Structures are given as C-alpha cells and as structure tokens.
Image (cartoon, rainbow, N blue to C red; front, side, top):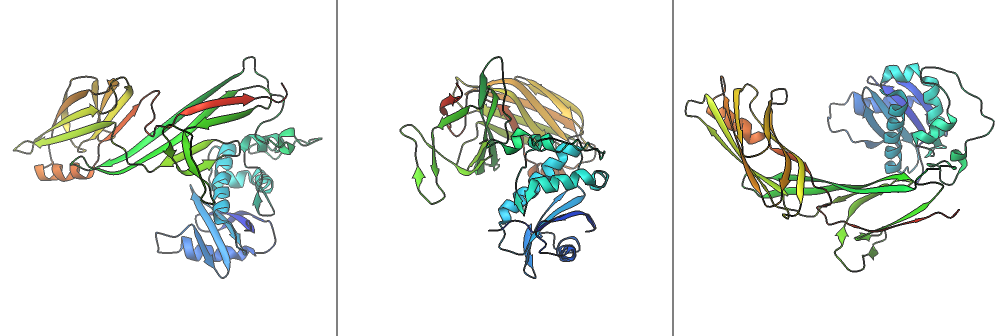
Length: 389
C-alpha cells in the first residue's frame, strides 16, 4: 500500500493555507471535492476517509483548521490518519495553540515540519524531541542555524534516544494503570464494561540499555496464531498498540463487576419545593485493599438552593458551576458501605421535572486503588541488559 500524495492544511472555509505535494500526482484543485463533500455537506456524519473520482481523501479537524491527505493509489488509510493526528500533536508541541493564525505566522517552520515528517508520502520522523534537534527555526522567527552534520538521533537506529545519556543512579519505574468504564442501569445491571490500560515507564538508565518485560498475558498474533502465558491466569487483550520505543496500551472488553456500587434514592417532597437524595456507596473489592481519593459526582438540578448534607464519612460539597454534588472520601476500605444524604430547595422545579432530569443524568465515581488491577494483569519480570557493560 502507498502513502500520501499530498498533505493540505485548510481553514474552516476550505481555503488552502499550506500544502506539500510529495509526488506530483494531484493538482491543488483536489481540495474542491473536499469542500463539496465535507465543509458544504449537509451530512453531519461525514466519514474521515472517502473516495471521489479515483482519489482517496483522509482528513481530520483540529480546532479551526482541517488536515487533509490525498492519494491516487491504494493508500494505507490507517497509516495516513495516524500521521495526521501525529502532525497535529507536533504542531501543538511547537506552537502551543494550533489554529489558522499560528500556521500563517509560522509557515516556514510548518513547511520544514512537513518536509521532515514525511518523505515521498511515507511518515518518517514524527517525534518532537528528535525534530527539534535538526529543525532550528525559532517559533515566530525565520532564523535557521546552520549545522555541520546531522544530529546523531536522526541517523541512529534508535532515533528516539540520543547517545551518551548518563545518570548518577540507574533507576527505572514501571506502573500499570487501568481505567474502568462502566454503564450501570437503575436496577444495578451492568450494561457495558471496558478496561482501558497502559504501562507507564520512567527511565533513568544510562547508555543504550535493552529492557525485556514479561507479563501474564496471552495475545493473538496477526496471522491468528496464539501465544499464551505459561501457567497462572492469563489476560486476553484487544487493540494492542505499540510505540516505536514500545509504550504499551491496551483495551479489555471483559465483563467486570463494579468495584464501588452506588445506589441513589431520590425523594421529592409532596409540594415539589424540596428534594432529598440519599446515596449509598459500597466497595466490592477485597478488604485488604483500600481505594484512595474517592469522588462520587451526583448530578442535581441547576436551580437548587439551600443545600444541606449529612455523610457517615468524608466531606460533601455543592458545585453549582457543575450542577452536581461531590462526595469526597480519602480512604474507602474494601467490603465497607457508607451513606450520604442531601437536601435541597427547589424554587421552580416541579416533582415531575426533577424526576425526568435525574433519569437522564448518571452518577460517576472516581477512585484509585494502589497495587491492584481490575484485569489481573501483572508484571512477571523486567530484565535490563546494557551491551556496552
């Protein structure tokens, strides 16, 4: 599959701000079809990839600009879209704010980035730290420093790490962080569950070490061959994504139970002038674990007043700018339950309106549990080898 023939940066009206033609295959007038199919289209669900007159269009919108890549060949759409998102990230790193004015004020630097990040339509160097080593154009300036030789990072086999790094103390820190997304019905049934995880590593290692990480996972190769862990409980992963220096993120679609369940009872008064909300939170993980920094966000009508709270633990605060009450608990041990009761005045909301409002707004819970993963993913070993000794 081929790469991009040309990359365009357009304003919200479809006018070309900057473009780079890498192969000379397409004229600048190809943006007219993009304007007709995207900007002037009445369809709100325009696809990010479409074909028109034999030309493949891949595009994303970032703030008040469009990033567009086109190709006449059988292009790799995922590669091109990933490049456009990476281009937006690099522009943000350089300009802090990516919009039409910043692109125009720094067109020389933008052209240099387009030239260095893509060669003949194929993505090349997309790391900001490496680009800064040999693109010396200052932000909002046109001064370019002359270099006698290319930086080592640009020609090294390991482009994201320059040579000669030294630390007084060789250390490495590894964290497994998982985020649990749950959608629970009013009767307590889990409608949807998803685990979003990442392995975050902070390295203070000298030289060019090679790190080998072992997990209790079982993965499926692209050809369908499976690789499973030896013994112990395995974790089936989906949507595994690797960075060039292997930063790992993953998604699990495994059914899970809520770690902290929240039950809400809404009791409007007969007159419809008062509203009482009782929240019961219960932890369902093991008693030896403790959830830290627990926040339970309870939505309330926008015009409530005279809030009154009573909680068996923690603190409760009303946030009118967010139309919610936040119940904060510093430490929530496992197999425990707590109750919070709140009372509000309703100057203009009837009982039926209050019930309809609560039926549409979910309660959200945020917390952290150290040394605990929902998926059961564990790090088995971490081996570090420095070939230079």
